[in-house]
Length: 117
Image 1 (cartoon, rainbow, N blue to C red):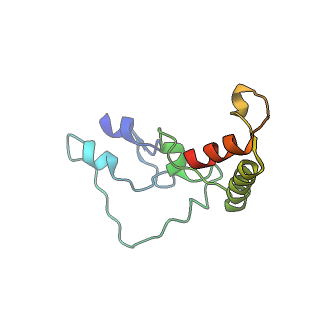
Image 2: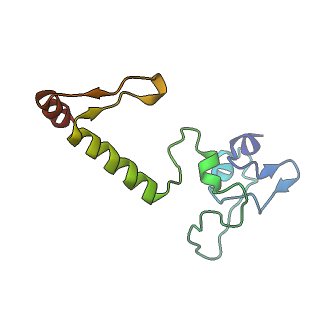
């Protein structure tokens, strides 16, 4: 059934809807060709990042494009600061996944690199 296939959290099955898994996205209601699926929300709720789920937020798992993630703001800030300071100091490190060499740039090359970004 389309509603079973489209459910990002596998909450819909032949037996019914597992309310513990359902995130209320309404996709099953939209694709049901028989109008058998309904969704009623009696109260408004704010996202709590699925605090009761051991696996973490359902939206992160369901997002096939990996556009949603949870990051530690302190780590992101530290990484960005380090990147900026490295540019100012004239140290340029290529993408670490590809391996690479640390280049110490001349002031002219350093200025060009900073201005390009």
